[in-house]
Image (cartoon, rainbow, N blue to C red; front, top):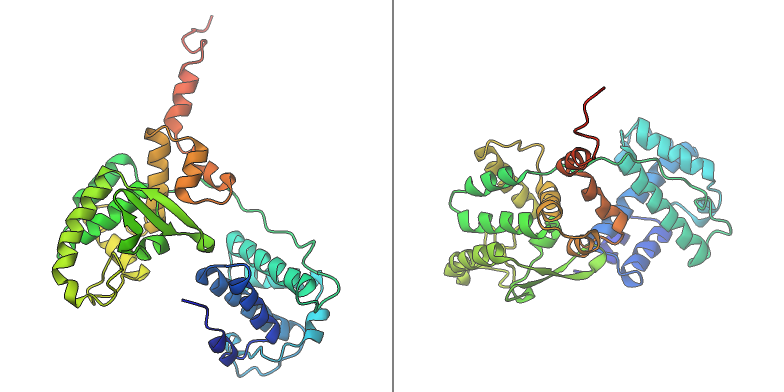
Length: 330
């Protein structure tokens, strides 16, 4: 579905922002989720700017109600690097944004002001050129162990057992993102080859192993019993309303089965199952980091490298293999 520029206009956004979002869609080919994220970040920035610059003084309105459609090119031309850091400080102190969330806003601001300077020619100097991103501490990914993964699969029951089992099997074996899984269409599956649309509308090939193929076959038999009721005939995973399954439905479904498996339903999300798949492939499948990068659809291998730090057993074995490990003290 194309981003609805008409609806953007009805929201009274600045023309510069409308042009930027249009550019992201039509020229850069960004996904709808990415465009929505940019819109949210920049809407917050413009609202902050109006208060910070004294352009809005109506205290009867909540922050989310502050109109921004009157942000002119003249206002944009006066923005400085100090203003951008003031906004990041605001998001940390008053919006409780984490370093990760603030880093995303830095990326948004850099992209927007680069557009204003290089494409739209609205500003002569780019105030975001020297804008630094907050340091993000790297943490090992949270994931299910092999035994916990088996327990989760064994705990799946209920009216939609075949569907839920297939979904979780896909997560645990293929490392799919939640949006990728919900977006799967039946025509995208040819034998053991699945084509998914990942971040940035990039297409990639996912190979289905025996567990996935078997779970898929079992689910399709049940799904096709109600084929005449299904509204979106191409959608693989269907909700109780016979429409394409939503991300929220998958999240709720997973929580239910995690509880049944006596696993932490708050700790493990669909994204943590993606981490689990990557970890199990790296730990037990002898998958090299470059292959894992392709499987997960990571643009940069640095993102994939977090999975090289999860196997403490290998580190323990490496220390044990030290030729001095058996030497006794004199």
